[in-house]
Image 1 (cartoon, chains in turn purple, yellow, green, blue):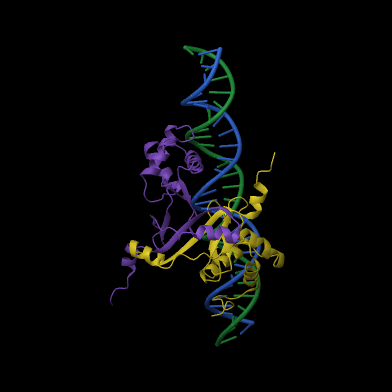
Image 2 (tube, rainbow over the protein chains, first blue to last red):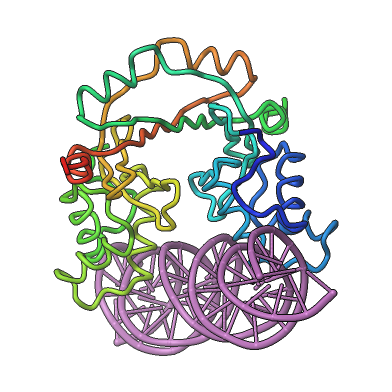
Length: 139
Length: 139
DNA sequence: TGCCATACTGAGAACCGTTCTCAACACATC
DNA sequence: GATGTGTTGAGAACGGTTCTCAGTATGGCA
């Protein structure tokens, strides 16, 4: 099935949420998605946005990320296998590819007896902009 | 400093929270910690438990984990570098060591310009018990 | 075209985990 | 004992999310 062939009725509200998510590169929270969707669908309610995000995640059309220390979930329309990089200072979240060593997943499965293993890998650090702004200046 | 030398006054309430956390192997939520602490300190309030957990995390005496799809944070008194394994069916969380390939962190830092990188690695799968209970039985 | 069953919507209440506020208390120091 | 500081417990408040429900839109069918 193509990315368009969602297993749910594609109402204008749902299309708007999907469009906002696909246009976003900053891993918006549900509240941010709601905000952006309201610009094109002013009458939409927050329940609809939450419901739609949940459906999209369930249908594999979006990913939900819960990042340490952040109360609100973030959403990502990039459903390709990828990892995340999080700035501890400004909270920015970026996508990155940092595949695990070959065999690590199989090794973990063999050691633990778990089946159908997948993983989430999140890097934490200080982004270049925050490094620059926090660098100690000469006195 | 030793594990006992916490940078805060060690009141009976704080000791009880720390004891509960150290005795736990199941990554309890704050509510679960509260529940267990109340068995030994019946008068303790939830605010004290949340405050203490926050202090312990800030002091490096405990780790806070926020796991995808679970609204409540979980706590872990094992502050050694380790990863986690999460059962998608029963929600059990286990500790595991699955170190990243040498140089991956440096590679990510070099590629992205981020500094002071650390990471969280969480595996998802079906634990042996859930596998057994969900195995299709012959008709 | 009209009817029906079903799915979807928006508003707001409810819920849950967490944090805040504040008066009372405990403790160390003098 | 007086003082200052940090801690406590109760409960209110908060933010994010889900639930409820009446109204509406949609698709299938005759």
